[in-house]
Length: 171
Image 1 (cartoon, rainbow, N blue to C red):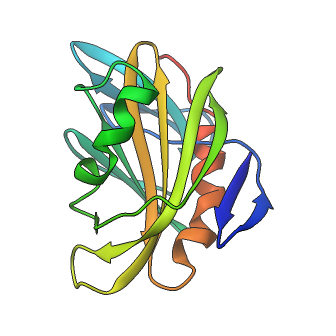
Image 2 (cartoon, helix red, strand yellow; image 1 turned 90 degrees about the vertical axis):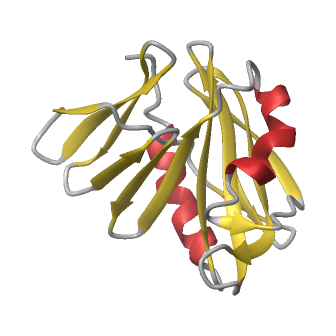
């Protein structure tokens, strides 16, 4: 799996994200977060135990040192392909005018996924931004996960996001 930036491919290990419904302890250093979609639990992710999880459906945010990741449930899409035209609108509370310039194929929870990378504008202050957005499906539900920021923030946070996504599974 690769995070992509400025035409240069940087090799990364597959990993991904979550949407929070409830948290159970996996170990002293990891926590499992389960995200609901539709009528019940739809996505489980393993994250560092020190991570803070904020849920405001359809978005869940995971914050831990070196990672500020947002995850959205995308009920309007039934497949990754159907979700692609919805990316710009879905992430607009974080990044405006997102322009996917590069696409990389990933595997999340045993299924095909896409990682989009490109510039945009930060929604909170209008500063130029870069974002990485993963689009994936788990158990019939489609999700998007994103990291973004000024300078190389998205590039630094892409690997930790992919590490989380690598743990994605049906609860």
